[in-house]
Length: 214
Ligand code: AMP
Image (cartoon, helix red, strand yellow):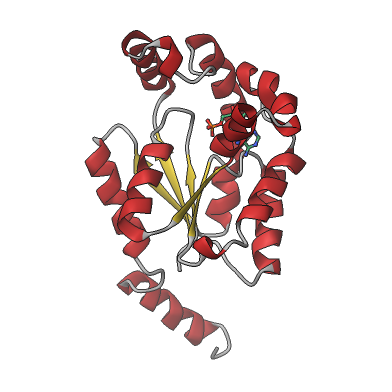
């Protein structure tokens, strides 16, 4: 079992990489954005509540997304592991996730940060707007909304990088590479066991030497 977060700005390719991991490793993709879009499509009360927030590119309240994740993670199809895609989006959500996983006896293995500069994200959204008919586009996939979504990313979501760096879980991946190259880098990151390299062995030896023999 492996539980991971795909982290990165809107349009970095998190969904694309999640699809690949679902196919290759049988992991369950939990995309809060998709769950919310499903709720809107179903016309539920939740959908009605979040539609205008999402169209603006703002974050929906933490308790809503934490509730969605918590309900879904207990289902049997999560047994091989889960890819959190688009969640958490801020530090309180990350803290809620840590608590939720600990409460279920689960742990987070890796946080994959797909890094893409803002200019490239604008280029990508402009291309999608040009090439995708309006009825097939997400209603928040516009240059104007991207501006706000990127503002939210820089103001709130980026704070997760130091948060997970402190936990020693983050892996940086260059999202400007091709889809296949990013997928290969993600795969390498997931297969790398922490503590298996010579540096980790040296660190353990030093700790034993100076740290009271543990
Ligand atoms: P995404 O599909 O991840 O790009 O999310 C689309 C939109 O759904 C976001 O712009 C937010 O309005 C909302 N959303 C998705 N995930 C979250 C989350 N974890 N916390 C708050 N809002 C979210």
